[in-house]
Each structure stands twice: as structure tokens, then as C-alpha cells.
Image 1: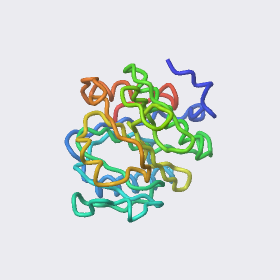
Image 2: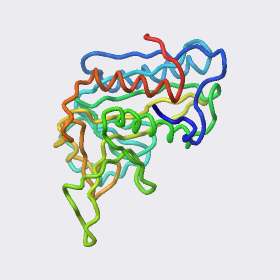
Image 3: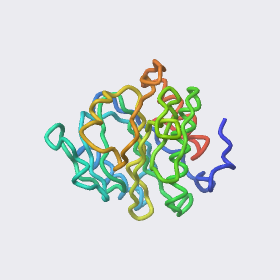
Length: 238
């Protein structure tokens, strides 16, 4: 059970707000289709015409370039399609075996604090990992969620190696969030070699299966939903 009091601020919606819709898509969702859907939904949420939504998808292999992406970090530009996106951050990879969680929340009903939202999404990833006995951690100088790899000491002082297991990137429009987090369940980790993930060198990328946890996507989804409700409030199936 998460201690919500440890978060910078609570993200429960105002009393009387309807539950957040929870939608899981089977198969692979085209990235451009996903972005178009999110942009339309965000506009309708902002206008009071639609409810908040969390949408869980997998994408075909692709790279995305955030607003801070450096072209030099795209090491294999012809390997997979590259999509420019309005979310914050640099280059990321999406592909089969990675759970992408698109979070469309109305911060006018919650807390108008972007940094607190990012912290809450980090806690969503960390709490989900904790439910599977994986210790995910924040780093002040690196975005995302990290796990220590004591089996691979590095550096002159023998400091412990760390791998990234979850990426975070959000955007706001009219105080409604979209994009979100991506947790590596069992993607092809070699696909990350075509970029410098999030512009960070000197560290690797891992997944739940790579860490020796043979979980199915449905297992992760169940834990994601439970932890989400602890941080953000109740959900209902879309």
C-alpha cells in the first residue's frame, strides 16, 4: 500500500468528480492514431464534454522525439519510424512488450502543479514495480525510474550500475494532461540502441523480464490500476 502522504501533493479529484475511465487496447496501436485520439480527448475534457481517461497501449517499434531532443542522439535514423511529439523530454523508444500509459487528467479538478504531476506519475511507476518486488528509484539528475544493478559495479569507486526501466513525459493543454509513462515489461532491449534514451549516457535500459520477473502484461496492468487508484482516485472500465 502506498503512503499517499509521502507524495508532494495529493492528486485525488474534487469531491463529486466521476471516476477516471480506464481503457486497455489489445494489439499494437499506431502512434499517430494515438496522438490524434489524445488531442481530441483532451479538448473534450477541457470543454467538459468527456471524462478523464487512462489509456493503456502497446505500439509497433518506433522512436519519438520530445521538445528537447538533440538530433545527435538519434543514432540509427533509418531503423524505425521517428515521430516528433509535443511532450517534454528527448528521444524515447516505444515497441511491443512495453506498457505505455497515456494519462489524460483534468488538473483543474486536482492540483495545477506540473512538477507534482510528474512526481505522482513517477510514484505510479515506482509503486507498480514495488507490487512486483522491484525497487524503482528517482534520480535528481536523470528523468525516469531507475533500478540498481549490483551485479555490474562500474566506475573507479565501484559505484553500482543503474538501468532505466520506466520513462516519463507529459504535456498540458488547458490544464489537461496527456502522454504519460512507459514501463518496460518485455520489449526487445536491443531496439533502444538506436538512440541515446532521454539523452542520458553511461547507463543501460532494463525490463521486468530482463530482471528475472516472467510477468504477463495483464499482471502489470492489474497492479498499475490498483496503484493509480491509490494516488489519483477511483476508476471505471471504459
